[in-house]
Length: 257
Image (cartoon, rainbow, N blue to C red; front, top):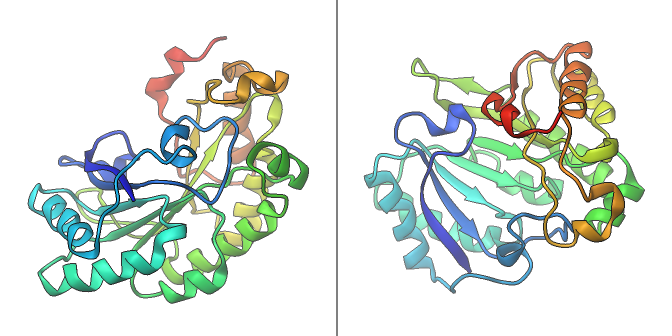
């Protein structure tokens, strides 16, 4: 099932460029985040069924529109169908880089099947603590599964590579959403990336958290992130030697002091 598709200009700069990232938003998700801002899609099933022909057509239409890549959003649970559609789309001329845009809860076994197919991996690193992951996303073993997935993604693609226009062509781009009250475990995330992946990891530390869905029922999540919390996350990354950061500075004016 697909919720929507089209050129998207709200992604990271290396994906968007001048003509946008060609996003396909798949319905449902293998996580159950209580604060999901897209919960009507990820948990309530907002979307329409599509077949192989239609999915391949979406990819080709995004290429015709001039998008810089095909950005598969929440693809983990529909990998077999994506591969079927890709085979058809490539036979009809699809040549754009493929972005695997995931919540980061991916098995190494599945990722190995994608070796040589996916060009750009864009996983979340949501938490570094098991209990927090279980409470907020319903997945107790998220941190260890997530770290194993990140290692495999990096093995396949390495550090994010950009062309002469600054557009991503291959590699790893990690997202980390700062949560109130340090719930995301930023220190553990940036330490892992610096020590076990690469200090040249392209990391987007995101500040746009706001209470949504069931977050108001959890006191620690029932407010936006503060400027102090956001800047603390940036500082933690710098201290670990991570300097290739995408910080979405335009959002700072929206963050309470």
